[in-house]
Amino acid sequence: MPDTYLNSIDGKWVPSSSGETFRNTNPSRPDEVLGEFQRSGPEDVDVAIQAAKRAYPDWRKTPAPLRGEIIARATRMLIERKPELAEGITREMGKVLVDSGYDVQGAITSGEYMAGEGRRMFGDTVPSGLPSRMAMTVREPVGVVGIITPWNLPMLMPAWKLFPALICGNTVVVKPAEDTPMTAVRLFEILEEAGVPPGVANLVTGFGAEAGQSLVGHPDIDMISFTGSQTVGRQIAKSAGAELKHVSLEMGGKNALVVLDDADIKEAITGALWGGFSTAGQRCTASSRIVVDRKVADDVVGGLVEGISGLVVGDPTDPATNIGPLINAKQLDRVHSYTEIGLAEGAELVVGGLKLQDELDGGYFYSPTLFDHASSDMRIAQEEIFGPTITVIRVDGYDEAISVANGTRYGLSAAVYTRDTARALHAVSELEAGLVYLNAPTIGSEIHLPFGGVKDTGNGHRESGPSAIEQFTETKTIFLDYSGTLQRAHIDEPSG
Image 1 (cartoon, rainbow, N blue to C red):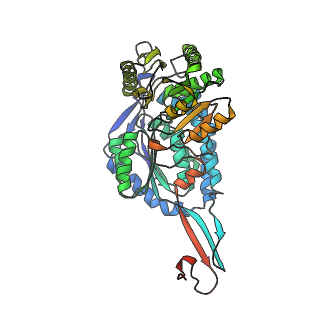
Image 2 (tube, rainbow, N blue to C red):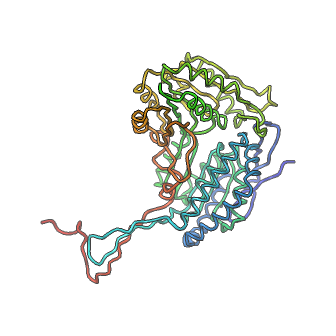
């Protein structure tokens, strides 16, 4: 019998109120059951939120440096357990061990940074326009925060949201993706060991329509932080926004890697392969579109074909493997449907486009796929596939390259390869994306810098770095008057 894992609510590990559970399986070998997890519903979410609400006053008053010490302890545990945590992510999510290590490392760097924020979290002290008066700002927590995270970064994404939320003095309820609940349980075990007080951080596993929707709609939730699909994100924005909750949304990308005619072709190909096929393309920042100057397109496509031929698809626990499985059968069918769409649209399928289940123990494997001669208006060039599929769009010159790169509703990440300094500086200015890379692929953000996108990628918030502190706090402006008399601010003085 598989092990049964519980929710973490108010410092206790408890079953769902209904007693219902769901199974979590290994996408490499779907017959392997990793565990039974709680199928939480509205009642469980309410219990978790009430625990967070009760814990909030004391946690809010806990000095930020002390909150930082707890996060620092949790971070040290992540460092100590990194190999076993990475192995668990590989079994649960399917990414290769190298990618799983990056996942854990992202949580570690987030913890290291946010622990230090316990002694920063700066406000501003500015001159007042009146004598014998001080003016300043301070940051205060938002309240009870609901966090909903995706399956592709099952350790990094909860940590990216949890650590800044906690250091700012908020209490939280986390609903992880139903495909990767075990990694979230491991993180919460660490938080408990590190000394996070009961009720401050709560975990409810389950499905979006049951647990997630209940979290978003609950009247005692002050903020929702969500990473996932546009469809769900728009629903959250509508329902949570109507209640004037704080809402932070990150909803994917259709990222362009631009190769100009003077680029280092070998370097661009290496970047495109890593950006396009890392984590089997299941990254919101994946380099899914290669926008290449027609003068060098044949060389780029030829190099991509050669590179793809050397990629190993298979057991993600094998260090020789480059690409593991997709997360589940639904995603496998979805990715393959885009291969059929691309062919119907008239793009040239150069390599790949095959399900590999029968060859690889029934796992959800898909061959790395390359389309060429696509037009920028094709669905495979406009819609997020979230799989190991790269689409090449050939263009005539710099201006068309930038226009095509900007020609989607998304605006998360973009890259340009060129050795021309003037064009490089112009491109990073003109590309419509929250993240822009020069001579590097569209993946590889760093924790001390903002992460997020423009256009339909999100709603203007940024995660990580100082931006995360802004996201999880309210700004309070304070005036301290020691003049001993009534002073009118300039805006209160009568005109004339």
